[in-house]
Image (cartoon, rainbow, N blue to C red; front, side, top):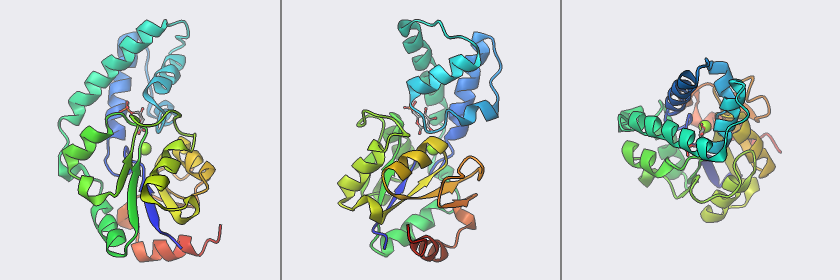
Length: 221
Ligand code: BG6
Ligand code: MG
């Protein structure tokens, strides 16, 4: 049975994935190449510096010094933070608040496992901190998704065994990390990219939470 639900943040709880894309696209534009939404998919869930490397590769720019990479990443982050400044509690994705409320009312622990170093800022802006028992983010992990570290740390903080956790993720790297952590995974969004998840949904709204819990509870993994 389930004792904890662990949520990715960007693209699962808040629609910040579109802000990441906007900022990366702007950087690509300045560097003189186009950057499509489908190219952006591979950046989801991936750390800031690895995302930059993927972006530069899309533009055929492989010979960039570490100093220049640092400068480009912080430039992107400044634009991204300008977009984050507009966030309000209304930007929490549909259905998330009531689903969290339901889980908590049943005594299921809730946590966040995010790759982002901006997670504390985002959580504060949309005021969801009180809904979570533990938060692990890009400031406290060494190895980025698809490494399982962020999920395992969240489970440890919640005091729950990995096998009793289920994870909500919108990125292939995150689904992979959660599977490596030995957890069950619900993919949110593009079903194709989340093919390895145990269950794929398009939004929390579509989800009857009780059905979800019994459904994955019966999966028997
Ligand atoms: C993940 C996002 O949650 O965090 C990635 O899906 C992002 O797109 C990563 O690159 C790191 O975020 P930040 O805010 O530390 O640059
Ligand atoms: Mg995400």
